[in-house]
Image (cartoon, rainbow, N blue to C red; front, side, top):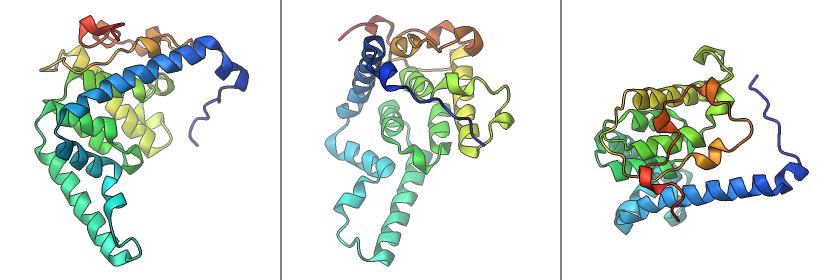
Length: 208
C-alpha cells in the first residue's frame, strides 16, 4: 500500500507563511514555463498535443470510437518519435513542463537523462516531484507502487547528473528556494549537492 500523505488542515492552509510559500512556488513555475513560449506557436502547440492531449479538443469525431482510437494511436506514435529524435533543450524543457504524468513517468526519465537536457529543466522536475516524500525509502524496491518507483529512478538520475556536473547548459530558470523553505525539508537526509540548492541561472534568485 502506498504511503499516506497527511493533508494540510484548513488552519495550516490559511497560514500566511504557507500561502506565501505556495504563491512563490507558483511564480517560479510560471517563470519556468515562460521558456516554452519562446518556441514558435505551431511547435508549442505540437508539443502540447503530444503531452497533454491537446489534439482531442480539435478532434471532430468524438462519437466515433474507432476513429478516435486511430487518432490516439497516431499521437502516441508521434510522441514516441519525438522522444527518439528531440535534440533542442527548449523542446525538452517544454515537454517536461507540459507532460501529463498520468501517462507514466518513463518519458520524463528519458528526458532527464537526455544529453541536451538543461540543468534548469532537471532542477524543476526534481523539486516538483517531491523528493522529501520519496527520501523515506532507502531503496527503490521499498516503494510499494510502480509509478513511485519510476519517480524515484528519475529523482536519482537527476541527482546523479548534478553530482557529476553532467549538464551542457544552465539557461532555463528555476529557483528551489520556495521549496527549501518548507518546514519538512530535511537537507541532511536528501544529501544534495550545492548546485541543487541554488537558482538557475545563478543570477536569477529573487529576480521578478
